[in-house]
Image (cartoon, rainbow over all chains, first blue to last red; front, side, top):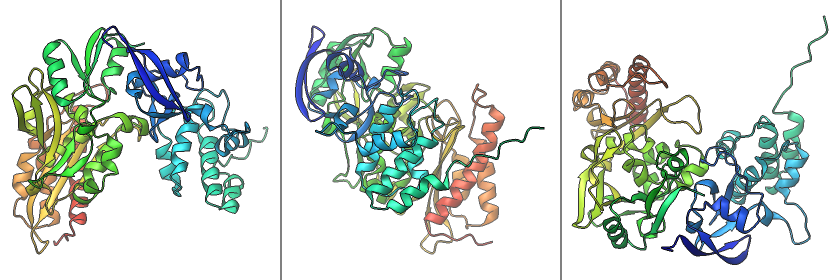
Length: 183
Length: 295
């Protein structure tokens, strides 16, 4: 370690791995460069935008402000780990597609990992609670409503509240005003 | 890659102290949500770091043999908010640190780092001030305890001597027993923003719930370091819970608060909200303590 490198052992997406890592690397650097997990995005790199969010021991962290060497012994999940053995997307990802919660896609992996953390609790959150739990991510395309709907729908579906989940759409949390008539 | 000259990973508190003695230029890194960001900004580029992040012995909340609430310095904000001891005895601290940054920042940010960086806007600081927290510091000469009001020396400077690290924050029993408090953070956004000013008030009422036995009010961003509104506190001691006394208390905080003009807010705005927040936080504290306002 004194020469600036260290072996880091950890579990990534369910697989035990180890690699020699530069002590100056962030966890984002390690996941992207050493493990080719490019769902982990480099956004602001100062812990503001949430694009690099990964799950470490069950909690969401900004991997850009987390030293790679701190991953020693940890269990890490990224979006690549959500895919089923048959290659299907998770219910969260399906909901993101369904709701148009993705445009450029840069914030999506981070949002999806935070959603995964929120929904694994199995709790039913209020709208305000969900918004607070999702607040550590910036999205410049969707205006957040589609993302919020995707997460809320998945939460309700997992709780067996299928009817309520479908209502999230028709109720239209975002109510668009009537278009202006031409003068 | 971070611009780091060297990184020394501590394996125990003793090892951390030895590393700091061997490398006197090195800075301590706990969660890194300040240090790593400042390295990126260039402010701390090229530093040597002693990392204490892997020291799990500094995590967690417990009640020690002297019945103090003992919060390990590396306990993250989210773990403090979810801790049953915190929720039972000093819930306001859990609520205050739940307003820091966003969820991912609360997962990495530590209460020790929040106090050791010595900034007045720290969301934990006004509550820790208002509850007379005691800082436990461990160094080459052993362990020493410092009342938090003495721990803060001036902006960004705290009472940490060479090769010392903060190992715990203690809340003494006489401070938390029958005490109820409320924190208000005034900021422009609900998430990912720092406080324009923050105010944490707590009360201990008489047995009949009609008088204030003790009132404490802590502020962040009302002075260069977190501070207490002692004149207002003294005024309410032993007084009846009345509308007039509540009003007078909140006006009296102006005898102590001394905010500055900054690009985020003017001194005048900060003085104004200091009064409003004191009143609101006091009312909520009275409600939580089961008190009634009579007259």
